[in-house]
Amino acid sequence: MSHVKFATRDGTPWIPQYIVAIDAEKCIGCGRCYKVCAQSVLRLMGVNDEGELVDPFDDDEEVERKIMTIDAAGKCIGCNACIRVCGPRCQTYAPAEAA
Image 1 (cartoon, helix red, strand yellow):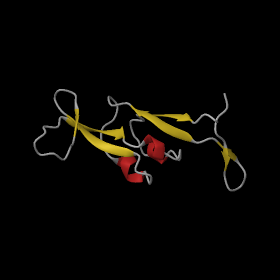
Image 2 (cartoon, rainbow, N blue to C red):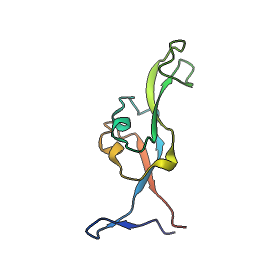
Image 3 (spheres, helix red, strand yellow):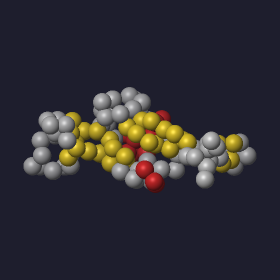
Image 4 (tube, rainbow, N blue to C red):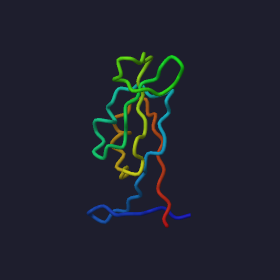
């Protein structure tokens, strides 16, 4: 099993780690990861009293708390900026498999 490998500008080997999951129990919905993601991978969602994901900005929905979700995993470039700002460390990453 081989992973996709790249190199930095100075030639140092680098294997990007792509976001694959966010632990909803650990996420506090602070939005820091959303703010640093230049690729629009993440989306803030609300959780209602039934545990369903809802639009947090919909006035008709009663939101118990907010959490971050992965909206466009395919846009992730593996930079890991999001985990560097995540206090609860609720994200999971994995390298891409080489074709």
